[in-house]
Amino acid sequence: MEADIVISVAIATAVVLIVNQIGRVLRAMMLHQTIRRSFMDGSPLAPALIDRIDQKKSYQGFGDDRVGVVLIAVGLAVLGFGLIAGGDPDDVRAAVGSSLFPLLVGAALLGRHLVIRRTRLDG
Image (tube, rainbow, N blue to C red; front, side, top):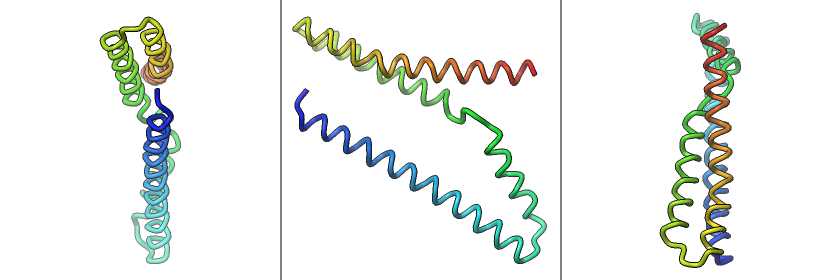
């Protein structure tokens, strides 16, 4: 892979992650500001908002199933591209090797989600 392509992919990934984190911080900031205002105004909604914060903290593994499926799809896409476009055995080997990471991480996330869901249904 060319160095400029790798750099472009890294920059795009960093931008997506930064925008995602900024969105989370803004959502949390707005929720906390709403709670503060409701306490100051004596609104009866304050306990419900606090319960909403507790619910978010108690649920672990939010989105693991979706992230796992997306990573598995990315791994399969890289694997398929390597098998279709790879004329040189070294290129095919590199594509198979690079597809293993998203496949295994996606499978681990999907497995974790299924285990958490199964333990919640049993207990």
